[in-house]
Length: 91
Image (cartoon, rainbow, N blue to C red; front, side):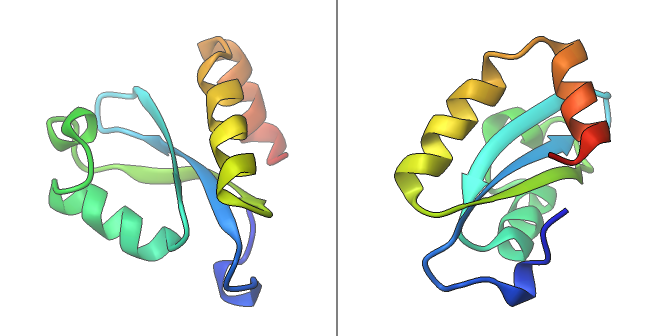
């Protein structure tokens, strides 16, 4: 996983969370720590709100919001099996 403390201020991140029920949630953010706190507080997403707690499983830095959105869409289109393989590979 990328180290969020050594990145540029312009960086965006695509992330995958594992919810308490085992489901996966994919999103984007500029501040991973803050977003994870929001998810676990129940204020970030209707989907994760009823599936707490969540844990960060995958993180990938992107150079722009546009690139992050495109990568998020690509990940969301993957099968569950492919998402699990992505998480294991860390790429």
